[in-house]
Length: 296
Image (cartoon, rainbow, N blue to C red; front, side):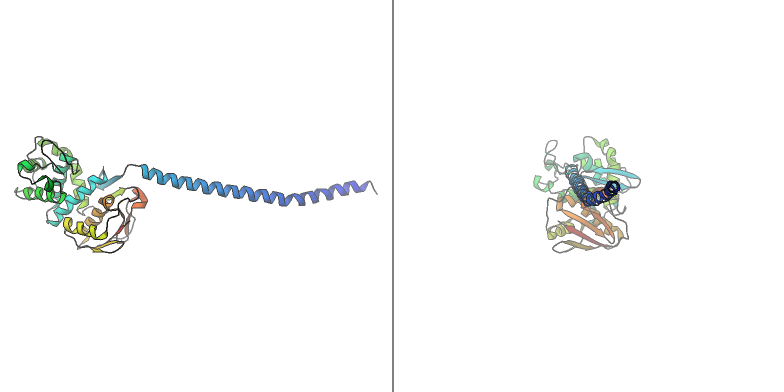
């Protein structure tokens, strides 16, 4: 009957309408999914880009954790402390010598190689040409000035166990002898870690490398400062440490001076310090006596 047709037609019309609309809904879903993916990619790029910008804008810092202490320093301070410690190791001096030297440098210059000071004082230890420490050019050479400090230190009998303020004053002849005592903690933690007694104790959070030193130049500095021979290659250098302590001393030296040379990774066995990972520190794993230093 003709009166039944509208009902049938309505049902059929509903089915055909639903069928017709399905592709449209699928297209909308695909558009929404595509938009979601695009937004997720944009958000991810913004997050990673923002993270990189924050790292680039953040103040570079080096952190040392040793003997239950945590201390932070600038890359400049840490690099100079590494040099001071390396020279003590080259001269086969005890860690106490490095502690005294770093403590003294902290008080005198904040472990910076200053081109100025009280009267004619200069350099890491604020040594004075007028008092026979050397020429201004010599004193401003950190290796020379550190060796001169140790030359005077080793003349003092019992310096290994003597009060640090007393010994530092005898070497420096400072107008403020008691001030050395204020920085003995920093001197101890730096010397302990940089001389290899506190494995994985140093990490530095640095921006992407801007300096690009040659491997041969880094190897030459390592030999001059620490008396350690390195094999240089196009991407970095390799050092075979004599023992675990020397290996960690070299590894920490490389991290401490990463800003100065453009070092990107330091590997000691399976343990790695990676400049790109910021303050993450050393990876887990077994250490060895072979150190690989990668350059940008």
